[in-house]
Length: 164
Image (cartoon, one colour):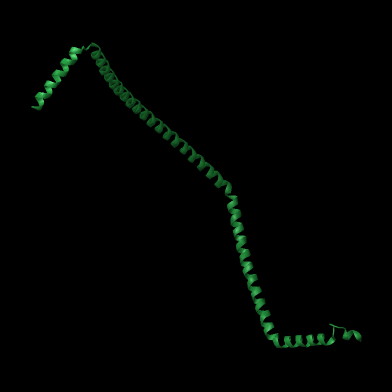
């Protein structure tokens, strides 16, 4: 009977545990029973909820199957509608491009006319300036010192008359 006194394996510890466990079960049996019944009811409610969810899921699957069976029809209708919209958009873009081309043509024509008028005006100014320069050169080449003296005296006389 030495093994009863083996260190860490004393029989009195097991006996003490058995007495404590029995007393705890006796004292707590009503509460344990209530907890187990409550747990059983909760599990039952969860099973009912799961059954309801399962039925709803089956209904959704049936609805999804129905939608999938009609998907080809919808795809065909959408394809037809997309083709019609693309054709309408192509026509609208072609018309818009034609309108834009006409606007650009008119704008280019106006700019050409404006540039033509401006070039003619600048050419007239250039010719007028050049004519004046040539006339000055011609007058300077043909002018004699006596003519210069005469013009100076006449200008001085004009100034005297205007100041008096």
